[in-house]
Image 1 (cartoon, rainbow, N blue to C red):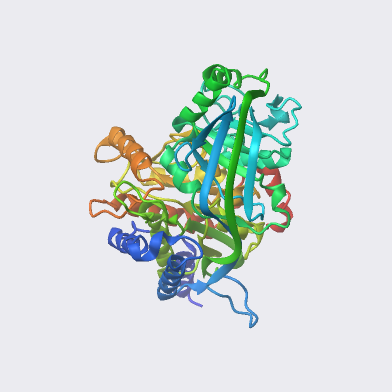
Image 2: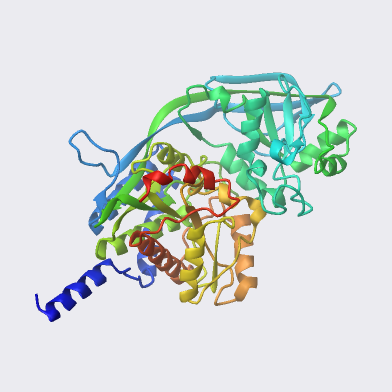
Amino acid sequence: MTLKRTLLAGLSALLISAPALAADLDPVRLTQHVKVLSDDAFEGRAPDTEGERKTVAYLVEQFKSFGLKPGGDLQTDGTRAWTQDVPLARFDTEGPVAVSVNVAGQTRTWTQGEQVAIRAAQTGIDRLTLKDIPIVFIGYGVTAPERNWDDFKGLDMKGKIGLVLINDPDFETGQGDFGGKAMTYYGRWTYKFEEAARRGAVGFLVIHETDPASYGWATVKNSNTSTLFDIIRANPAQSHAPLEGWIQRDATVDLFKAAGLDFEALKAKAQTRDFRPVELTGVTFSTDYAVRAQKIISKNVVARKPGRRHADETVIYTAHWDHLGVGAPDARGDRIYNGAQDNALGIASLLEVGRQYARAPAPDRSVVFLAVTAEERGLLGSEYYAANPLYPLATTAGVINMDGASTAGPARDFTTSGDAPLTLQDDLVALAAKRGRAYTPDPNPGAGYFFRSDHFPFAKRGVPAISFGSGQDLVEGGRARGEALARDYTTFRYHQPADEWSPDWNLTGAAQDGGLLYDLGRELANSRRWPDWKAGSEFRAVRAATASQRR
């Protein structure tokens, strides 16, 4: 071989293996995807509906048209499907939900969706009937031995309902053993319901307050009074107490007052280790409603770009395709929860990142595009995949999640859900700097977003995983405009029918975000690096246990 041919061959190999840095995604194509997926014809994209079938068909059609390969369930002929079956249990309340409290012999009737939001029982029963159950205030409902914290102080919760505060004991002060303003998993409502089951309680009612919850009552009502889903469990009662629900703060204050208690004083006491449970003397709770439970099969959609050199190693992009479907009408009478920003826009970004990969040379590692179901029902699609991975988690180099994006144009910064102690996040920060963008730590760490996106089921199993967030320091209007728009979305559109596509959207920022995430995944897919959790992370040891499987 001549020197010239040798140089040309070497240059060719270098070009093939080098990262194909992306231009920004196409805002027009992003808009087209969002308009389709958030159209009323898709009925809010709830699992096990015609909206799911239309959504799955659209995603498969798009991935196929790009030239990607199916990456889902392995079939009997050795090929792969475009989807992964996700078996779920579906729970609906049937008929009215009767709720009342008895206070010193006087009955007060509460309205479902107003004072309380009672979730359909997920224990397999066909009717939940509770009569005059004692109520106990349990503070934050936390048992954390490593922090020397126990809100129960030996109280037997059997036969009782607990009232528990949302978030962590140090959210209000910003100081303490639970991360200050940054929420730990103890602050999540999912943990509190899990603790109710572990304690054998009749159930917990989580006290809603907007700031520590990070969303208003409309979000609570819409998310908890509609159809619920769960993974199929051998013994549901080990994970769910019979009663799970939320209660308005004002209703709680009135209830405490009727029992001769001061809510604010007890809330302050609950922020200390000395707190002890307080029974609401003379107060009992009753409810009665029917439940319809059934097993359904939902779908994760999975596309794949096979790797050229290390096809058995994987980089995964994720986004959830589902939303809340059809539910209670808003003030306009609209009952379709279109989920345009949450998360048709994230899915649009996933599709267009996939299209970029399809058009580029194959990377060294394989890249999977995973559109998951039932995120809005508790991260169930991603939880199912992480528990039943199609590609080994030990050799999954990283997970990049996209949940929503900016609709207000480019930003000078970006963020992630929680400030993850992770080298993959460092890589993202360095790559963004080359594009002139700065990293802003999670602007609302008390909201616990790290536990609320589809990267979390991977992270808790040790896989390096991040969830990207658009910045709020907007090129047009700066941080003041970005923060105002974020507040407006949370208050008036998040998990409400008003989350609809608008011709006023400016998706050039979302397009820049997608290009950045393409670059991040492409660089990782062409490297021999294995991102890792930093010292002190609770996920570091889990990842280290599989180190021998990575070369």
